[in-house]
Length: 360
Image (cartoon, rainbow, N blue to C red; front, side):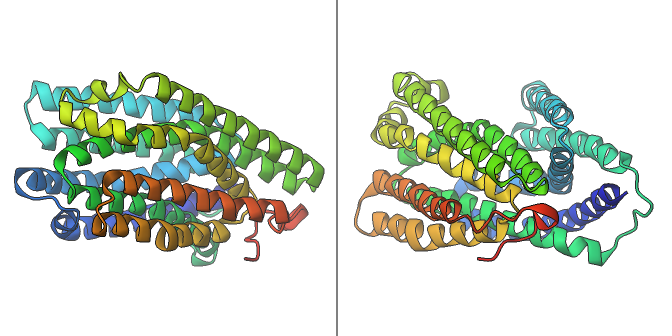
């Protein structure tokens, strides 16, 4: 019953927050694109895409709530099936709308919105399937969910904002550099999603073992997860280095963009084991309810480490390579802060209080 009540509250929270984000995105799309350096036809297309795609935000948040709930009850196959089907539907719809109906960038955005709506509907069904004696909005139950999700949202938002700052700086360096950055950016997040699979497993396992008061089991599982994640990151590094002459060409045939991609490729490839360790530590600390620390760790790393390096790269002419050194420093700072937190063990709270926010 308790799980069902929390599932319903997460649904209400997702709908409310999603509605607010839609309004903000519709209102701020144009100034946000201008701040990023978007102008002319490309800027107009970006505004169009942002405004249309914002309609899918409530459904995307519902999907995230549904995935979190199902992970919490150790059901990992159903969210995988729903997300895979939604992404396949997205591909089909975008091909139909963009090439079949010739709707252009608007068609791409509408394809994403429709796919997200279907995914959201599937997760609504999962959230409401849990037994509950009361599904009405209850602020006292929403507050702890809002605190935890708020901490994670700030952490994730700070990471995304760092890449947006990187894009804004590089857009002022040159179009070829921006194109090369976008290639690495998209591959970075693809790899992050793969590495996140290990982090999710660690999150579930750590939460379960902490609840069972098995501190030794927690440490053993945590070390194993971190090791596997670092090895996976190393495998991606090797693949990126091996395919350095192939992957950029799969995204573009512009020789200037390909040449600029080559200047950051080594940095991009070699940062992957660091990313693997960071994502694993993220999952472990989230499973222990230590999201507040993760929030401040990410904010510190972004504001005090990455942003100064990115701005200095523009001021002193370090170019795109300087910005990417900043991103490497960002991940290294996160590894240092989260690694120290893990080794100190203040996140390890076993028994009935496991999952409560740990002290910073």
